[in-house]
Image (cartoon, rainbow, N blue to C red; front, side):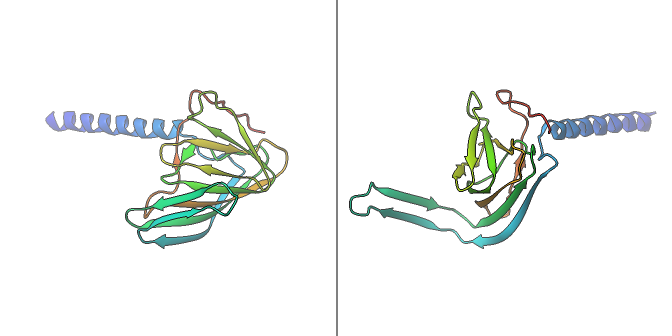
Length: 175
């Protein structure tokens, strides 16, 4: 009788844990069909501390700071969106510098209370801050769009973390 009770409790625990894991995955918004990200290059950097200030004569001041503690992984990503596809809501443990190489991409950021779309066309660039900054990049046009992203993250960290749909942002129709 005691063994039967233990078996029943074990089955209930497995069912509850399984449901929690499934529900967590179901709430995440992975990339839609038609989005493909490819790692073009990956390298490991040792800890570094860079400070660079440049003020050419007659130009406004320019300053760049970058400091890491511990090793970092540096990724170069090539991303392709078919019409209507999106990255899904996600974040990265570090920042990304992004250049749109063809087409038009629309970026939605969860920390914007109105989730106002920001549109970037070929030749434009933008920064994804990473960390707890969650965003979704979408191709809302009828043509293929591409970008290149350079990402710096802690060594060995998962490069992309899927996130749930934020309540202040739209649910996108699939084309």
